[in-house]
Length: 120
Image: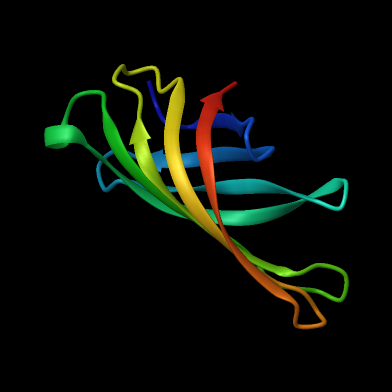
């Protein structure tokens, strides 16, 4: 089974959609939907993954999502790293991450994020 799919993080309310995953070079891309003011901002995602011993089901994975600010939205950068579950259906991505945010007025924050992304 491919990593391509939709994953929801119940802890953060974010949705990761992996649209492309290339097993030969480990590159992935997609979008990350980040809750913001009762709606969501869509961040472009790039990442990398590697199968344990270059085969098998468990996989190390990392991805980054970025939203650059507009007049009504902040700049948000998120980076995540973790591992998949131990079977080949990738039911869960067990991840930890961090988030930086800067709004148009210059107010900023940095925080840690956690929790699994569960395949839908």
